[in-house]
Image (spheres, rainbow, N blue to C red):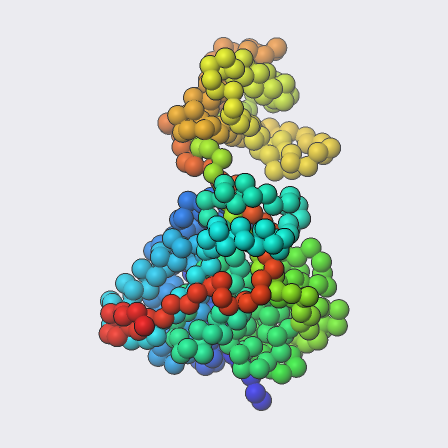
Length: 460
């Protein structure tokens, strides 16, 4: 039976995997090893700061196993969303790791790198042509948003990966990518149905998270055929079930039947899930529906200041009962102290875990406090020094605030750490989360080829 076999080692490069599971995957002779290396889940900081949210040593450990195994098997390795966020500095992080592995092991292979960070003038030209629209709940884009952005990336579709494969690349490192395409590109290149290939990629992107029990640190294997695909786990500790695979199909999606991506959407109205073995599920019926025009998602961030936090615990039931009242009184005291001192433009927040620390973002939900509370005082200022000042004053005010019923004159807060205040550094927020209509799905994403010979690389 004609098929494309895909090994997904881990949910995100650097999350790790058992060598035993990986070896089981290699015994099945995959045609490609693909891995997603990034996400927007950790927030905007990593894109703005140009650093990786995954640990460098952990990423190197994973690649030091994956790349030599793939070269020995004679199959390509495809890595998407390099360095976590896929910008130019993130590509550099993973490129350096690959170079170190190649040199240490004396590896020879053809390498391709696909960039996804876009110049602001490119974005501006599309903006002026009216080709950028917001993704809910993002507002309409303004030209100032483009000016303010520290870094802007666009999600790569499968076409640049196919071009790199056609160019003979054995290791492909890409910037910000639509997660499923690194798993689907080879199959689409070989003529397999786009809908099935992308659906299988949608599940494989998170590896064994789609199994029971789920794990982001274990492997999954996919078999794509002309009218269906099958998924199986590679560890005896896990199983694929129709429930786990169907549930993961809905992961991070607002519509259970229509899953959008670059150039179109997956239609799941006729999709079926069938248990064909104890740890194996067959999926069929998914089709790809092209959109009227090709759209890519833009992700951009701007800097909004610097953050300082202080963490403290409260166990006094009297203070716990008055915590909202005390919190607002402390806020008012901070404002009064600095309003005439040139520090009125700051952000101060009290995240109270044990009383709606998570759900407080949703209005109208009542929260019964626990017996202990964790209070995170957060201050954001134009400079780190201003953030330090606001956080320090809020912390000391809260620590010694006198409230009705208070018995002891000692501090109200218990600090687990000394120093009590911690610098969190520069703060970023997403200011581009939009779709951009483009004519060519390849031209915005330049591909650079290099040749590694016994560990040393030369640009082609």
